[in-house]
Length: 281
Ligand SMILES: O=C(O)CCC(=O)C(=O)O
Ligand SMILES: [Fe+2]
View 1 (tube, protein in one colour):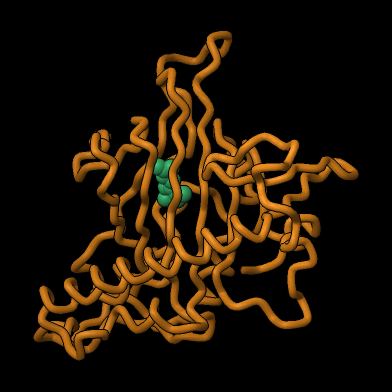
View 2: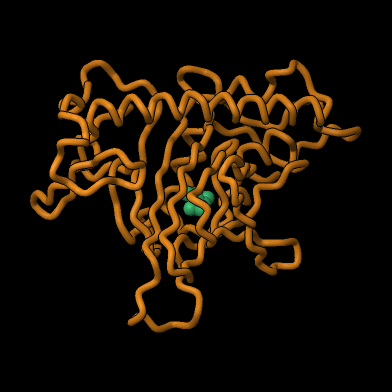
C-alpha cells in the first residue's frame, strides 16, 4: 500500500473529512483512501511497524483496527499498524478476486472472449485499484436543511468496477432512468456486496453496461460505514470499447484514451460532473 506520508503531503491518499475531491464538494463524511498499487521501494512506509491496536491509546477506526490520528501543522497524519496493514491486504486481495469473478461472468454474459477480457485489467499487479473506507456519522440534531443530509454527493465511479460492503446502515441510493432516487436495500445478514459498474466499464462495453449515478444520504441514528474496492486499469492502459461490442456498424461510442488521461481530466471537476461526455464520439 502506498505510504502514509502521501497523506501528509496533501496527496489524494490518506485521511480526509467533509471535503470530497478538490473542487469544493462537501459531505457529512470522513474517509480513508488507500492505494493498492505496489509502492515504489524508495517510498516504503516508515510507520507500518507501530504496535497493534489492542494496546494503543487511540480510538478504534471503523474497521475495528486502529489508526492513530495526529494533528500536525493542521494536517491529520494517519498511521496504520502492521496488523491492520495485513488485514487490509488480505481483504483487498479477496475482494479483488470477487471483482474479477464478476467481470468474468459479465464477459461471458456479453459473449466476449477471452474469458478474462475485462477481468485482466483489474487482476494485473499494476492495476490502479483503490480501497476506500467511508464513515458517515449519525446526523446531528442541530443541523437543519431538510430530512436528507448529503453524506456523499451524487456521482459515478470512474473505475471499471466497485465492490462495496457496508455495516448495514441505510443511506446508499441509486439514480433510476427517470431521475428518481431509489434506496439500495441493505443486507440484514451482512453477507452480500453492492457491485457497481464504473465509467470505464461503460466504455469497454460500448455503453452496454451503464455507470449508474449514486449518492449517500444521512438520515439515520446509526453511523454508516462502507468499504469500497475500486478496480481500475493500469495507468497507461489504452481504453476503448471491446471490438466484439462495436455492433454491425462497427461504431465506437467513445474515442480511445488512457486511464491516466481519464483520471487527470476528472479529478479537477465536481463530483456530479459527467466526465465521460468529453470522450464520446
Ligand atoms: O458509502 C457508500 O455507500 C458509497 C460510497 C461511494 O459511492 C464511493 O465511495 O464512491
Ligand atoms: Fe461511488
